[in-house]
Length: 230
Image (cartoon, rainbow, N blue to C red; front, side, top):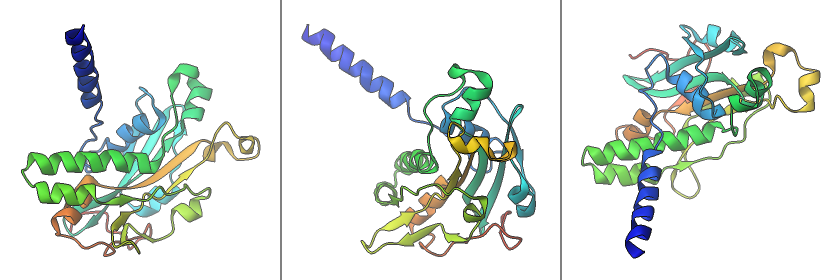
């Protein structure tokens, strides 16, 4: 009986380890397609378009049918430090494709937590336990999503040193709940949207190694944005 119980426990541990979510490199042209799947708990694949200018990204609106997402990268030097994604929410997918099309809605900080775990695993795999501990000590702000595109597109510090002395990361985003009464009054093109600015695992690793300083990256979505490696 004890042996059987131990095997069951080991099975659950194995299952938990297998559930570590793996995102592609931030420069992957389908990064936000994976974000779409994760954030809406869906198996549906979006057609993901990488925008070439911030002006085009600002103007873009994800679509639910066909499922269309958008992506753009921000850099500091050679390091990709933030991926910006525009995807659709769970409720809108269920409304268009049926109740089984999507699960529980996730939000931008949840994506960042997965990427932090990924950064820690990669640093430990490199044998850099000190940097892995530093990455684990990063505080991920549980940022409330904005309700307007104007707020989402304002400039902000991607990281900063808080009053607690710790390095904090922001995951600014926008969310509209398709199931809310506001869907009756909003234009269809802005219903059920989920927008995220996501700090990359590469940025977290650079902070953890001391290669970059917190607060040095002021993120903008204007023509001054650095969207290619320098």
